Image 1 (spheres, rainbow, N blue to C red):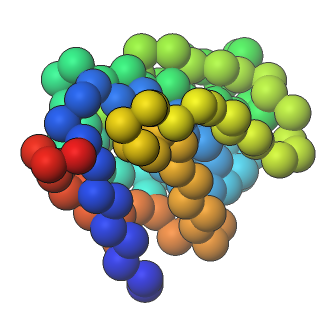
Image 2: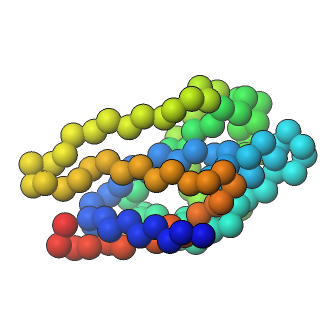
Amino acid sequence: MTVRQLRLSPLPKTWIVDLDGVLLRHNGHLRGEDEILAGVADFAAQIGPDDLVVVMTARHEREREASLALLRDAGLHVDIALFGVPVGERVLINDAKPSGLRTAYAVNLSRDEGLPGIRIEIDDSL
């Protein structure tokens, strides 16, 4: 497991997170073995109260209720859930603040690695 330290500002954040292979076992719902991956509860505890959490997945809409229930059980609040998104690349494009604050990050994980290696550090100097 590689530890990934995200050094972020104290500003409220938008988290855009894939469901399968990041939060839940990839295609576990198809085998009747849907499960939360390692580190999700710890990750959820690091999300600020003013942060927005967007979860996206290629799963069908009919999987919404069961999938989101697993995330709630792990303590992850989800503000927006997008089901039925394409299976290809997810591209985030954002502008940097004039202060130089970096406003877009991407973390690529190995499938089903979960989030045990994600550490968030809030740096008040940013």
